[in-house]
Length: 175
Image (cartoon, one colour):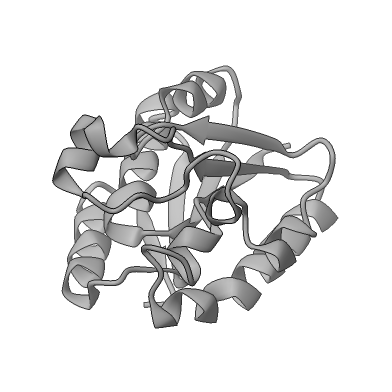
């Protein structure tokens, strides 16, 4: 396996739940297509899940974003069902309690991927921060983000985040 796909936080609360937005569902088919392609090529697929406890509103993030979301054990926490149905048993899931996952970074650091692609939600928060983690873990890997497979509730920040990632030598596809 020389390549890895990371599906970032494609969870119900970001699609049609407490932090959902209309265009989030529109990237679903592209994400499914990517998962199927990576599986066909015997490349690794990893999922991340934003994961919070019932006391989320008392956390630092909750004080800055006071909307309960992705509370463990709720439907909003679950990966969108059509996307989750494409998960193979060997595909890893990293639950993370903030935007990026240090555990994901530690795991990637043990690998020798030549290419890491990220997709999912939200482009200007969790996709961006996990792309930086991937770049930090494997500085010589080619990091990609497909603009057709990520989105944000804030279109201005979405475009700015794609610009920022490009400035960090992350290739933006289909822009």
